[in-house]
Length: 384
Image 1 (tube, helix red, strand yellow):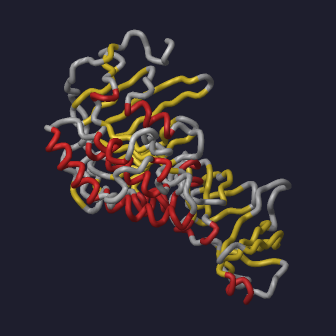
Image 2 (cartoon, rainbow, N blue to C red):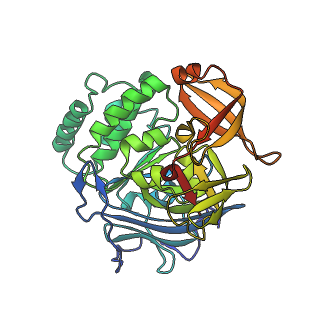
């Protein structure tokens, strides 16, 4: 294949319509979707890694959330035309960007995709104004200069026009890269972990500014991240990727309250996940020797149960459905105390149960050797 592109595909094929693309009711920034959409159904084999991704985004900020190496960046590169899938299709607002069966594979410059790389990909030998002018592809010289002036003002880059990327801060480089992208009038914006290389203070400041700059963009935005907090603050829906495969698309509420799969639960921050056996309206957890009441019929296909550390509660002895645990380890975190517990009936080698509570609440317990613990039925995550 040489460059990784299947030989049967032709670059520069004419734009085409793809019938039967279903719509979703996605939203961004409390606005209804206006019909602009991105459909991705692709597969790619790269060595031992198999990418198999399916999702659709409308006028919304959709997160691609997954651990490092799960295929998030590869997915963006396939959408942008930098990498070529082995099979599948990519459709943007009715235009077919890629279709392996039809032999369509548009080159990047014809896709109208704005890609904000992790390192911003500015041209190092060009000044700020020349980098931005690369995104202004039409109009007379006077029109381009007018657009440049307006863009410099909008992105607060006035006074930096003659500087080179190496003379800019990380935040300034990001603004230049985003300005260049938006000047090219993309139909979709791809953000590849835009804050991964920044310290926490600078990251927070740039996150607020980036959100402001993207506020009025009228197309889909794909936000790649492995940071669930970043996703929660900026996105409306989340597509989970696990070892190259998409695991479904969730609303924020679904992800954090009803994640359905182990991968989704772990990425949402759940620390306690063990094997579960359905038992009517309860689940048996063999590793911990427990049976927990779920308050509703448990589906037969449930295979695991998750309990968030903050939902593990201390209760008085004799409380219904409570179980006794020994305190194995106490870890002081920045603002909370993490307590690792061993349920009384736990099997040898079973994972410890993690509880997280406020430091003052832990101090009031006076360093006990054991605790009576309970979990509300509504706080038990049933995972398939």
